[in-house]
Amino acid sequence: MKASDYIAAFLAEQGVTHVFEVVGGMITHLVDSLHRQDRIRIVSVHHEQAAAFAADAHARVRGVPGVALATSGPGATNLLTGIGSCYFDSAPAVFITGQVNRHEQKGDRPVRQLGFQETDIVAMARPITKDAWMVRNVADLPAALARAFALACEGRPGPVLLDVPMDVQNESVPDDTPIPGTPDPNNSDRPNIAASALAPFLADLRQAQRPLLLVGGGLMSARAHDRFPQAVEKLGIPVVNSLMAVDALPWNHPLRVGFIGSYGNRWANCAIGESDFLLVLGSRLDVRQTGADTRAFKGDRTIYQVDIDPGETNNRVTGCHTIIAHLRDFLDAVAAEPLESPPGKHEAWEAHLRELRERWPDASEYRGDPAAINPHELFHDLSEIAADAAAYVSDVGQHQMWCAQSLRLHAGQRFFNTGGMGAMGFGLPAAIGTAFAYPGKPVVLVAGDGGFQLNLQELQTVARNRLSLKIILLNNQCHGMVRQFQQSYFEERYPSTAWGYSAPDFARVSEAYGIRAGTVKNPGDMTAAFAEAFAQPDAPYLLQVMIDPNANVYPKIAFGHPLTEMEPFAKPIQMEST
Image 1: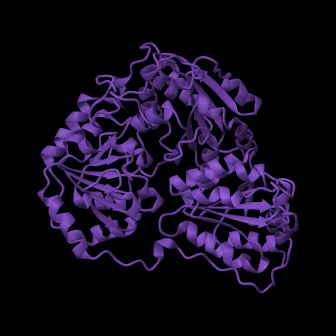
Image 2: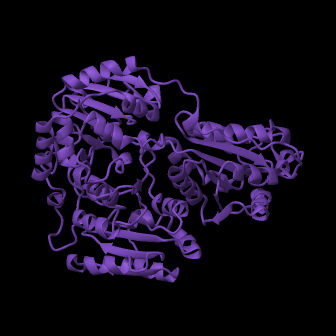
Image 3: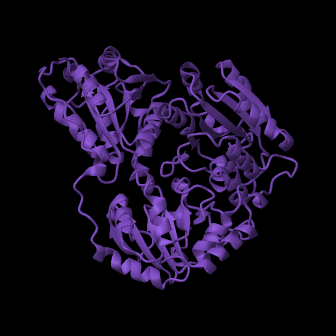
């Protein structure tokens, strides 16, 4: 069979249901093979970055590596931001790029380029992939594909890139070449965690008076979220979450405390500050979780850090006890432990955490125009009207933090955003990938006017596929997060954020793409606006929500201070470095 036909058949055997791409000359063999095979849906988007973000989100939902294709040169390089997003947020993905014919490649010649659009994408991608290589011989193709899919999933998941020259795609693979299945990494022969490894952790937990569990994105990339509630309840530990684990527990779970970090809920950051024992699951404790003062974060508390990647433990925050393990295995070991009573349960501590939450309600943190829409209350209301949504996706900006602070997720709902790369423009393509993974179920995208304009063209993909996507677009007519940064550190000079920046009427833009839309400006009109947006659950809709341009996201860590000292009551003592 033709090599591109083999690739199409291989992808289908791995459980790939959708491939995201922008067509180009060097992948026409692949696109034609996928089309003729008709087992995988080709999703044609309008920018390769969007294809990468869509594959990222699709993989996070399904656990099967997301797949995106791109042609050589600019098509391949346009994937790089999305590849980096997969790498930093541990999403399994396989990116296949078409390369110019082997006889058109420069090799060792002292020239910049020989073939048209020839570009060494392998060298560019290698630092942000688990591996990247070119398939130079068709005989190597089956093993290369098998290795790519296995590598994307095993250990800490991430992206792999295969660069396949066009003439290799057009060569023949023997018809009897087997198509290997990819082993399920969740059923691999990993060693069980010995009870002796848990004994010191459980002994220290029993001694704690104010224990806390911090869960990060590693829970989701390990696909261990189904095991998490049972383990939490067995241990009896109150839970705070990082930005990448907003959906670890439903909002009304009795042990859920809230969102921590640079823009965390004030009460949740206070909980960290007052804790004497911290169990960290799948969080690398970067500056967005700990603040700049890592000594204050560590304090005198006992910290246990569980992670599959040894490099992420005792990195910024040192002096932690470490358990190097897959989170599924750790949670299974906890579930199997014969505990007579929850060792971390302390009723007085839990009551105190509830009191902190009542003392610092999120909606009271709003400092914008009191006559304008309060974003915290907006997300409370959205949570109710979107109770049947399968998932939320957020872009990057102020709206992302308001969403993480105040969204009230129901049991089973997922929340996806970009953490490590933090790429504006992630939201709309990622929501498309998520919507394809939840056919027939509503997906909610939360976006801001700045980030939305980076991949706005994908409204055409939404319209063409009539996705069940509800777009809640917070429009403050500026790049709000950087404007807030400029207000703090640049004497309220706002070039490129409020000055020299503009945004269109997104409702009119949406309607130009054939997607129904509306705009809401007043708090009293929110209920009716949401009702209209969700009136047809299966149809896309864009709701533009006008926000006070001067509204800042509070609370926010006063940079240089401990996690518990937050703006606007405390002021930063040094400029943020990240």
